[in-house]
Every structure is written in C-alpha cells, then in structure tokens.
Length: 233
Image (cartoon, rainbow, N blue to C red; front, top):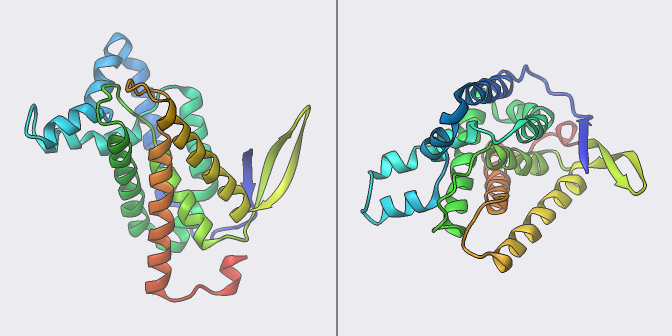
C-alpha cells in the first residue's frame, strides 16, 4: 500500500518537517558528489552496530564517536528510491504531528525517535559491520505518533489488487496498523533467517521507532489533556 495524501489539514505551517526534508535532500546531493569516497563516508557516519558495541565494551574509539552516527545516519540514504520513499511519508504524516506537538518539541521527538530506532537496530544486529543509513526509524516514530493522535483520519491509499490498482480512503489506524504488522513480521522473519551478516532492511529500527512514537504521543496527550473531537477525525 502506498499513501498518496491524507484528509487531515494542519493548522500551522510545518516548518520543521519542510526543513528536515530539505536537509535530507541536501545530504543526499552531497553523497552523490563524493564519488569513490562515498563508501568511507557511509562507514564513518552510518550506524555500524559492531563499532558501537565495541565502544560500549571499552574497546576501539570513544562511545561519543561511535554513538554520533546514530544521529547523522538518519540524514543519509542509500539511493533515490530510499530517499523519495522516506520523504514522501514524512511529507504526508509529519505536518500533522508537528502541528499537534509544536515545532520545537516535534524536532526533539523526531531526533529521539531516530536515535531510539538506531539503538534497537544495534541490539538486534550487534555483530554487523555494515552501516545502516536512512530516516526510516525517525519517520516510523512519526507514523506511530500519527496513529495515536489521528486514528480516524482518512488516508488516500493506492492499494494493489492484482492485476489492478485501486485508490481507497482508509482510516489511519488501519493503514498504519497494517504497515506496522508488516514491519513486525518482516523483523521476526529476519531474525529467524539471519546468518549474522546483517544488511538489507533495518526492520527492527522501524518497529522501535514506531513504538517510541506511539508511546511518546500517548504521554504527550496525557500531559496536555484529551484532544478535542475535531482534531481526531
């Protein structure tokens, strides 16, 4: 399923969401300019689980140096499709979460979701030496927060009903709930089939980010009080 847009207009300008998209695009353009140096750049600034685990155990570099890629990696991408897919989801769902949380808290939340998702990826792949990059974990946090805040919002979705495609308006709780279920079962299968080499999609980063986002929004709404009915339609 591919979300096309949501029928949930935000009340404020999503300045942070737009800025995040711009930074991600600028970082990818920089990657394209690196040529043969790109591999070393990804190893330096992508999340390498083995490197982080070694730092935790007191070997190799400092924990700060090994942990910094947990932040920088969420602004790097492995290709055009990777970038466009992530930014498309952020564009559709990020504005409403930013609207609900406020600009500053939303930025902190986004970075925290990416950081937590990176830690979960390290936990499930501690010996992997391949760098993980992408905003998927942080954006999964946005999706989890959106599901909690706007469960009944209508998401216009392109659904493959082979051999045809159909555009259907689905409630966010269904569309994003199915997205999470797919991530969870894919993550479980990746553990069952893992040979220790890592690589592929960081399913557990997505799962961790989504869970963090859902819990963070539940806490936020609990502190702020129950949202009005109009905001949850």
